[in-house]
Structure formats: structure tokens, C-alpha cells
Length: 86
Image 1 (cartoon, one colour):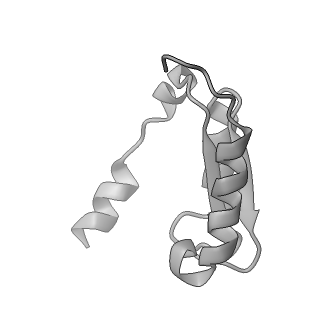
Image 2: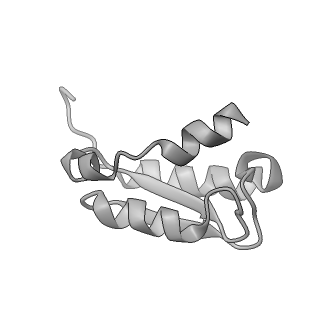
Image 3: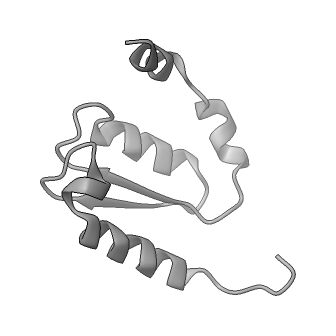
């Protein structure tokens, strides 16, 4: 119960605009704990962030659809340009 309350009160929305690293937000369309609207807000506030949804998945994406999740992450990572010295 404490985890749920802490998550409910945690809000860093005002800091999201300062993120300058590539960001990928992934959400299951059936996630009841952190609904899609939260992921949409998150991705819209991070400059250049990408949002991907996994149809039919809930909050436990890594358990529910690990292959799909791995593919999304792999494609995202491959899209990030390599910059020596980073």
C-alpha cells in the first residue's frame, strides 16, 4: 500500500522539459496502474520523446509481451545516433 501511495504522490512533470537525452515511453494499452494518458503526458513533456504502445498489454509488459517489448527497445536504441565522447 505504501508503494501505491508513494507512486500516486510522485510528480516530476515540471522537470521533464529539462531532459535532453533520447527517451522512449512504452505503455500497455490495458495498463490500469499507469494508464495510457499518463504515458502520453510524459512523452509530450519530454523534448523529442517517442511513445510506443503495446496493444492488449497491462502494467507488466516485460512479463506479458517480452519479445514485443525487446523489439521496441531495440529499434529505439538503433535509432540513436552514435556520438563519440558521449
